[in-house]
Amino acid sequence: MNDKLLEGLPFAEEEKECGYFKDIPVCENYITAFHWKEDWENIENKEDYEQKAYTALLEYGLIREGKYFYQSQCGNCRKCTPIRLIPEHFKPSKSQKTVLKKNQDIEIRIVKDPKEYVTDEKARMLSDYYNHHNPDDEKITPSMAKNFLSSLASSYSGFFLMEFYCNGRLIGVSELDISKDDQGKDYALVSKYFFYDLSPETLKRSIGVFSVLKEIEYCQKNNISYYYLGLFIKDCRKMNYKTNYKPYELFLNSQWFPLMNDPEVIDLDHPYTFPAPGELYDRINLCQVTEEITSHLLYSAYRQGIFPWFDEDQGEPVLWQCPTNRYVIYPENIHIPKSLKKEMKKSTFTFTMDKCFTEVIKNCREQTRKGQNGTWIGDKIIQAYTRFHKAGFAHSFEAWKDGKLAGGFYGILMGSLFCGESMFTIESGSSKEAFVHFAQAFAKAGGKMIDCQMYTENMGRYQGEKLSRRVYLKKIADLIDRPLSAKIEI
Image 1 (tube, rainbow, N blue to C red):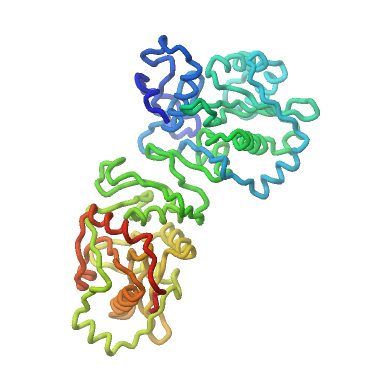
Image 2 (cartoon, rainbow, N blue to C red):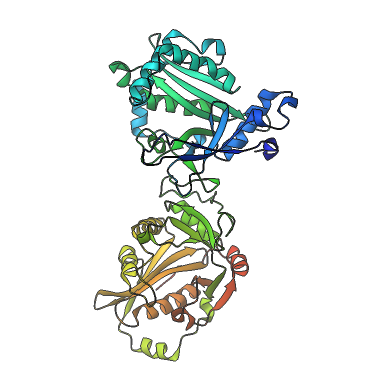
């Protein structure tokens, strides 16, 4: 992406009526246009500039509407989110394969000549489609639809149509944009609008799904990096279908983010890079805000010294944080207080690893903690870390007495680094003893550091070390890919 293309391109603020939610009276947008550029008249190849600058605007989450580009900036409203698909990795689902199979008789034509954009057949189809799907709006006539179609060529130089025919009869039209990279190669395909025939025969075909699948196929055949689907709106039926096509990314907090891909999939070779603490927000520990916690995000976060810490009960989104200071324990040098040694000599507890992860994390949620009102462990945390446990990264350590769960804790294992998350106690002393047994077994297995996140009196008894964020991140960089020399034996 070449940001220099956007130099001299001014942005304005605009208020307009929200087209999706009646309870939101006004949408606040940032808008710009190519012809606003300071030296627009001096650009010799305007078509080349438009198609390359379009890519830069797409990377910043802007959407084209006519000759203008906009981005919604409606305060704390996150309902309208730009979405894009990565065609290279797309594989159709079982139901999508069925749609492709039942539409094998459809002929597809690519139309790039503006003279062919306007026909009576298309104008009638567009007016019928629009009036049917927008009953509360002013009706448009075929003549008005013709005027709209004739204006498409002048809006953007990279515009074209993908038309769908059955036995020679037009049954659907996709309006599409293409953008280019710095070398002039096709970079992104942008879905603008799709309208289709309303006959029962066409509706049986799931023609809307078919059009998306063929547009993705067009990207794959032409090595196009991204397929943009406009806005994803979770609470709008007409706009929430877009997450049926995976893998996708959402534009959140000024960057494209793999927010809602398959929650169980982890791409070990391509961890997500979080923004630095305080880079996006006026909070020194906060790196990122999301709505979901996927296993890939957890994997990426712990590699970068980041973890999710938020109050789900209070309706907070997921806050990915990297504290300015950390407290760590080196298992080889763990200090065991005399009183605890005495307790352990006469202990009646037995200890296990990964015996009942879900029970452990749920008990951690129920644990009453001094100075805390409630818990940060909600359903979202439990579901995410349970998935991460199944993936082999999250582990539980249990203390048992008379066959019953007496205490324990859970955390994340990355190489020779263990990141403790939470602890609970039912029988007095159980979790302390479980922790010491774990630390000793971890040291024997080659474990080098236990991250306690922050200093507490409970962890302070083991005489660890307080580290600055900079030192902590430097230390874990050497540990996260250093495998243990042996299995942890509890």
